[in-house]
Length: 181
Image (cartoon, rainbow, N blue to C red; front, side, top):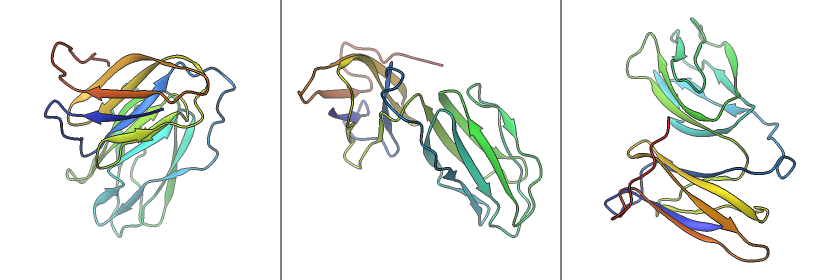
């Protein structure tokens, strides 16, 4: 499955992710590797990342400063508490959704995680293009998310041995993006 995610201006978003909802159980394997979220220079890096539901995020404090990451997001509220330099904390993202991450001590530190329901996802390229591989035939909901524009979705059918193309555009004429929490 291939396609493109575009803003209402027709331009690609700075950050974007496209994923499928409704992937059948057994059609994908949860990743075992942990995502690394670095704290260094009073910054969280990367500032935008994607995690598969059930995957663990490792948070080493590589800074000389104490940090205190938290989120009030419905998908994964947490408070890692005061984390001294050199210490590593872990966090499992177990529910799909958008997770805004902040530091209680440093206002400028923030990141955004998109927790997707399966491994059928792609971070968009600079052009807004994406490709999802290995998707079994079936009917799904394709979801596009960008922090600049929010989330939209539409139904999509993947047929056996055929290439499926999909274009997701925020604010497409005659079509309102689907708002989701």
